[in-house]
Length: 487
Image 1: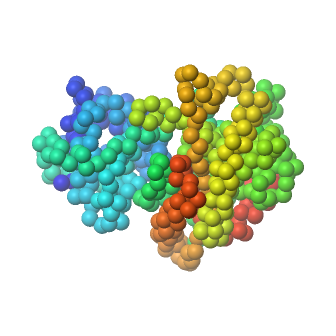
Image 2: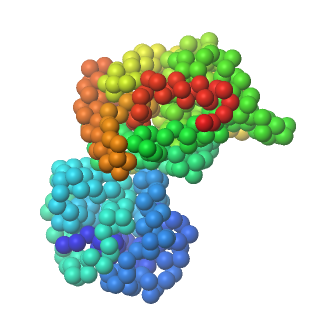
Image 3: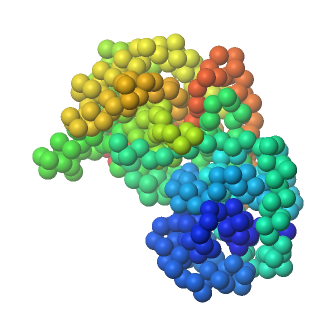
């Protein structure tokens, strides 16, 4: 049985609440990618009919090409917002199992990708986050297979087929933790800029930890058989003001009509803090990239960057490279995490991981000091009165909210990619394969570090980025940035 877009919609329709129509589901699924086009599709009875009979493929311009550039986290958030509410909760396990079965029937190679998952991983998968899995399936049916390919088997996707998985529903568990946008505090970075610089690799691997965690792999533009840093340096230069200054300070610049000088002033402050690539000053590339990935990929707004920690909160001697606020929905209820950051760039990936975990252990051991640093700095220096009050409602226990936000860890790892090829196309293929190999080898190493250091009670959000020569490149990039311009 072939898993195509029509099959996805048909399964969701069988598992939907009463009076949820095909066109509603078609529109809702596409809204997870593009709200505007999803709304158009929702009202186009003819196109929906042809899609569900596998006469049409999905629109290249409106679905396939945008999907190839999308962030799977935002796609999961779209599924949580638009699709999950349309489904009967009791039927969601059957939807997951039937889509899993069809995906396994559609691809045969173990390394074949279904969204973030490889087929080999999907065979063993027994724990599902519905929004994440539906996002993976939608990504696959949009980019991995033509809808017309399901023509011969679409009639086999029936209620009996879906209901046949009822006997297996107790064999899987449903994860109900999803990341949602933190409306109380806007992110500072521009999504379009982030996605133009950093390209995500769908490696299909996952961390097996007690608390829900993530591990992501990105790479930069490749040119002449090497990573090209031009776009990265320009992006860092454009983002330096948001990295260095609080939102209140940025607004003061704007109110005084000095927005154009923000970048120059930020660079001046960084130079006063220390030398380029000096760890602990905010002038090290990993510290800046960690802030970038926390906002651009995790969608966790900045509370404090390393520069702010070393200036406004220097008396606390914090070991954190940043602090961000992450909003989650856990079993239908909103909860928050304070994400404390650690970053490391080294030639060997294991050395970078070791260095990061040294910092994580120190942050955990100084937990009380780290929280005092956050509360004192945010409530006394950083935000306007209205924002401060909203943050107090999140961070300070009250009758309405009894628990503190959980401590979580965000980690940036930079390392040297050991790949060489003169042919550009060969290099790209070899680089991608080596990156995936590296991340899969790093996972058991990370899991052992968590266990050995007794840090299993936290969530982790890892971000990996390879360099040509990590030790050399990180210094050169920060030298160029602090000189005040891009390459």
